[in-house]
Image (cartoon, rainbow, N blue to C red; front, side):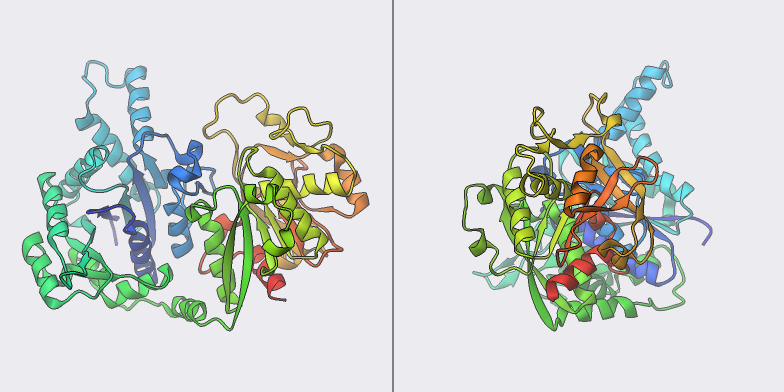
Length: 533
């Protein structure tokens, strides 16, 4: 292929239909045919990125290799395709406007009135085509956040209209919509889809393919109706029926020939079938477990499971390797603070994970969970703040440093065992200023960390401002908590373990960000194995 093709995925009727999963599934099918594919997300909100958003607002903030704080859909893109994303893969309205305003202030538009059309739409188009021009991809799949008809989505839809005109048969639009089932009438209804496509037509965009989310199979009559009223051929009406796991969706899209229709629309000759044996094996293992374990996830935002999306998906990947179903017991950290009966709470779990987070709320509950795991030989895994809680708990209850804490939680703690990183102390702005992205780590031999990774040099992604205070490090070592991963440049402690414990590992980085279907994360695999024992 000489030129990149562009696939746009829009959504209608309602949000949360799964545009990210459909985009990722299509990417899996195209990649399985031998094409190079990347996926990007256009988000309509005015924040520069989701880094300053409360997880309750927007779910997890996903971090890329190059340190971009992005939408959680980029996690799905990487988990499905095993292809790294970057800063260029997540574009917000805020980032677009900031770029245009910066150009206006520099005088780039001198003499012109700066307007939504052409200046904002040109900037959106530039960012869409940037990946195609610089990344050597056969396909760029662009998911547009929100729902067609939203005021904030209008510039993005207008940009698609212009790009379809400019790119000709190098662009295709997929519209994901919803076909509701009315139980009282006993039938599926196409009217919401018709209205959604009508809204797109009013904005000048005709979808080429319509993917219909549904809880019941589409009848031939329904497909014919959607085809007739939405101006598309019947074989371009694709059923996306509810699946027991998101990882079944690529196989469902294969049956529905979504990739075939896309290739036909783009005038690309179909010469081979997608190679999906590994994917099918993964789904088989996932759906046919031979054992089951329960892991307690102790966090601040457990009411919204999307706040820990990468962690829950990493457990699915790791569990499938062992043909083990990992059930998560969601435990709100604050509920542990006043509760003295931890034995009852943790009686039915085989492992405890203390999750990442920021701020003081729930911190004492997390520390109590760590203490329970340490004293009762329950396999323990702490991530980012979870590792810091393990350090604080050990300082208080083993080293005898009463009042030990992180300066994030208590600026006047007598024992600041977790302190702010030196380069963070002069920073005033909150957004995009943490230690972000991939950093190297050297792993000590004969440790749980080394037996998981099977190498002494690793690279993992970070998102934090605070670190283990090395002034106290020798005291920890003397009492049996050892550093097992160190940053070679800053000597920052990246991982800790208690060798006398069956499985007690804490890491400052976020291993969950790098777990994919093709490469389940070794630390999650080792933790699941320990819990299975």
